[in-house]
Amino acid sequence: MVRATAADDLDRIHAALKAAGDALAGFTPGEVAARMKAGDDPVTAADLAVNQALLATLPRPGEGWLSEETADDAARLECRRAWVVDPVDGTREFVMGIPEWCVSIGLVVDGKPVAGGILAPSPGHTIVGDVDDGVFLNGVPVAVSGRTELRGALVLASRSEVKRGEWARFFSTPISVRNMGSVAYKLGLVAAGFADATWTLVPKHEWDVAAGAALVTAAGGVVFGPDGEEISFNQADPLLPGFVAVGAGLESEVRDFLEEIRAGG
Image (cartoon, rainbow, N blue to C red; front, side):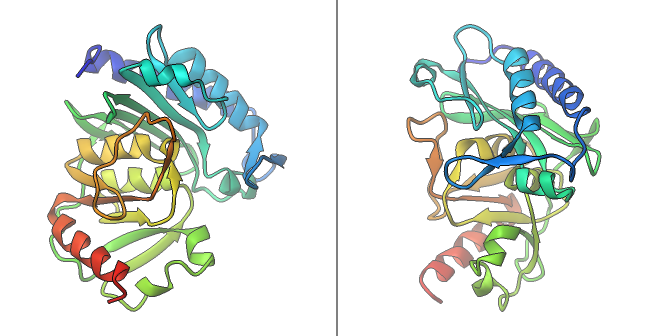
C-alpha cells in the first residue's frame, strides 16, 4: 500500500477542511438558492465553491480525484492514491437550513479508505483520522461505541429513506432508529461513538461514504456492503450497492440481523 506519510495526509485534510470552511463563510444555510442536476439532486454555489477549494488543496501529481461536483476522469483509475470527496453532503438539508450536512473528504489507497475528514459547521464538529493514528473529534481522541447487544442499539437512518417507507420494516425490531440527513455525517457520528451503527440498503456513491468508511475503520469499527460483502473504492462505476457501518462489538449481530431482514424474517 502506498502512503505519503500519515501526518502529511492528515495535514492536507485539515488544510482542506479549513479552506472549505472559508469558502462556506459567504453562505448562510437556509438562504442559499439551488438548482437541480440530473437525477433530481440539488446543487448550490456553495457546493461548487467548496469543490474548488478542495481540488486546490488535496490532490498532488499522480493522485486521483473523484468528486460529486467534478466531471469524472478515468485517469483516476490508474492512480493508487485517490481523493474521494463530497463538497457538501446533505445539500437538501443545507438549502433547508437543517444542521445535518457536512464537507466530506476521503483518501483511498489501493481501493481501501485509509484517512478521512468531515466538517459539520452547524453542530461544530470536525472529525479527522486515519487507520494509523485513530480518530479525533475537535482534536479529542474518539472511538466507536463499545456496545455488544443489538437490543436498544442506536441506528442512524436516512431521513429521505424513512420518508419513502424504506425503514418501516425496522421500526418493530429491537433497535432504536433516529433519522437524519447526510450519510457522511451519520458515518462520522458512528466513528465518534455517538451512535452504534448506520446503514443504507440502497445505492450510494463512493463520495457519500469514503470519508466515513475511513473514519469508522480507523475508530475501531467495521464497514461492509448490504449483503455483507467487502467494498472496494476508486472503481470505474462509483455507485455502490449500499453501505453498513457498525462498532466491532455489534458486527456479528448486525450481519445476522440484516440477513434476516433481507430474507423477510
